[in-house]
Image (cartoon, rainbow, N blue to C red; front, side, top):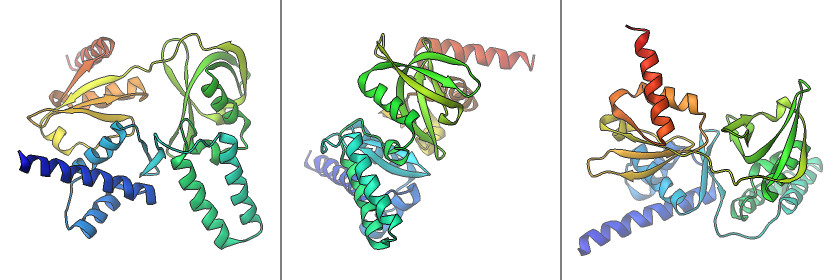
Length: 286
């Protein structure tokens, strides 16, 4: 029993060490593995490092993969900085850059990064990076106040919807909305204006969580993706994965490529859609 507890304690310390590394700097998966080998004389696989990262996520620490590096976006216990206060730090940094105070500018940039990581939810680093974009500011404000918005597109179309979240994909800001049926990702570049409506969102949007099981060699070598978390590791090593926000069509096509090593568990609509997708594909080879 004592031996088992010592293993648990050792794993807990490694999770905390992972968290410490990510607080200091953004790191890629190879960088994390390198630090463990350098300071602990241990060589870990991507799978083991992903478990440490996902344990942090399970505890409420928002860690995202941005520019191929793991980044702490928000910490559950932090200082109560508002978006305006975050933007003030950004403006101070910009002033240092305009005055060509390189050393001070680098220190302000480091301070800004640490402030963002320790700010209370839902402050998002996207807000500070694009603080002058009124569209993103209005979208974030609507998210905070649970207000409906009206989006005016560059092609002169417009419609009302519920805002959900702001995220980053491949260096691009993405606005996620609920169109009444499903989550939809939009680029600010396609949007002319966003107006807040006086109405509150009719329902609290609960994004559909897809659950699927990965088996065999796929489970052993699988690298967790941006929208995924490990829900459970079965005794035989199979993984049960949860996935939110990923485009439904892209997700199903990706899972279908895994063949018998992947089983869609829920929701039932995803199970049905996967079966239909498989049936349609088989028709092409009939």
